[in-house]
Image (cartoon, rainbow, N blue to C red):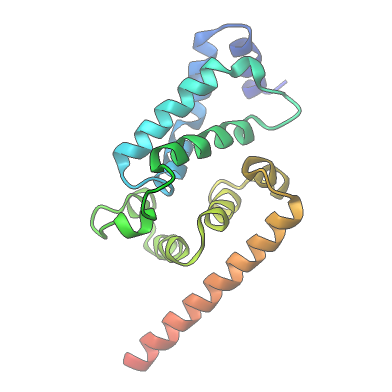
Length: 180
């Protein structure tokens, strides 16, 4: 039994301390993920808080046949979507370059450029699938469960996302060579 599974079992048995241990394990990763889905740092923090509260409230419903991170990220996706609401503008339109939460959560400038390009190029679901795969190192099966999509959909859209980014990055490189 891993440390995480011990914490989960204890949290399901009612231990608030064990749940706090789980929250500490996932807080930074969840916040980084939510920063890619929310219009501001404050919204991402609100979604994180709502996610952890919901996870605490419903920890008894967690099924150990699935990875805990999959269950938690699914809650996070729902909470971020609630903050956006059905009639809001795409968060990409709301960001200014200086205060962009996505740029704040990625320190390496080369990686940052890739994720900023991904955010502007890919639709929300494909971007999320790419983030979960490459930033969070989730398996294809876990991503499909988190996004409530088939494994086939996940594989195809990861491939399409990679191709779209490759095309955009090659286009940007060609333009910079032409003007350089």
